[in-house]
Image (cartoon, rainbow, N blue to C red; front, top):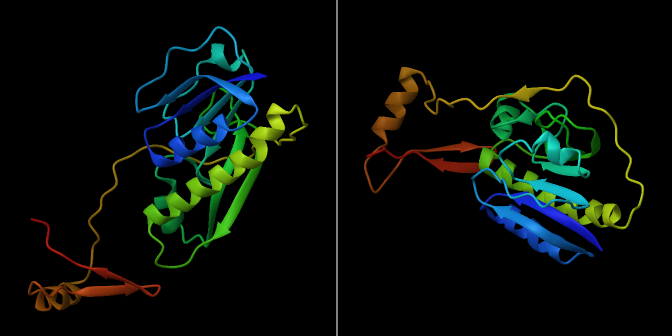
Length: 208
């Protein structure tokens, strides 16, 4: 039976992924589900899995066994952080998730599969991210049993990859004075101005 190390974060997608791995033909000898850096690696294990983990896995660990990461965005175009935000601003119509082998670079290892889905105008970054996490879980259910069974899992090297560094996002949106007047003229709680984007209605409220 394969011994597995699972690294994640204290969010539902990592928690659900760990539960799925525990159902597979393996023994989870170490797992991690918080926002701190994991340091208690076993002396030996057969496979490392990362889904939601925030840090690089040390080179020493990468040399012990294969490591597989699930990135909630399509590689090689959307490596890094805040990628759902960037995809929407880049006017993408498709997003997705990627399973890849890990190397010393963030999101830089050989790609096993990038699985994409379509999304429409009005989809928020939160919704897009959650869809990508669901797709990551689907990839985990499909591929990790194959790896544990010793089946051949092909991969391709990344070319022309794009990495978005973690930077503060300015959440103020500049609008014309005429639009500001339309908003303030309609602002009279419990009634609030609304805007419609892609068939979805957003309510505008004053921040107290």
